[in-house]
Image (spheres, rainbow, N blue to C red):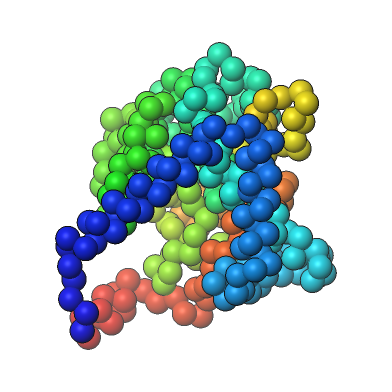
Length: 326
């Protein structure tokens, strides 16, 4: 059995961080047009040169077919997956450039807003807000915009294995006024933020496993975390589903990427009653995430196994505990 060597791990983390910061420095000097060209080149390597098993091509392909049925043929699915990788690499470049590219005074040059009244009214109320999105568009862009306009969030995310990289991303989010909550065991910390009237932000489109509540996502049952609906009910919090997706490039007119930022739904838990409140609220915000993804499916990260857990696999909490104990 291979022994754990803390010193070796630390050195590996340092080398990874050095490579990351060097790449970040180089990418930070690129123009938007050059960043887009680099993203297309990296996407070509991922999509055309690497083994498809490594890039989870078949997972993405299966997910797109599950979501859209026969809407797209094989060639069109390939186009979506290729553009997904282009989008992902562009998003990484945008994140690295964002601290020096976006300020409050130029937000309206970079962002176009759609259906913002619902979200503004929720954030301006005396009730806390749970801001939800999915792995769609540039979710870091939307979080940064809320911070710049004076709506700080407690962002829920899984800490990175590399502590140096994790520190960089934490500082990246803090620079617009946000704080961080580690995803593992986050319920009590999220509850504490909402209890004092604060707002939280998280992505809510991953498989929740055997303890999730099953709601339809693209018409297929998907295990979804019930904690979001439970927190909204317990703390009388609005659930605001938002997005920020990249608009077509206009390099001759704009120096940086432009995005449409909007809200597809504001879910008020007061409007849901009865024994199925958690399911119905979860369905409402999941449908809102789906609505955003349908706008630009090539900007959704299809490699997550969203439909991994099947309804027939679901078991109760007591049985799950018994399995663990056994």
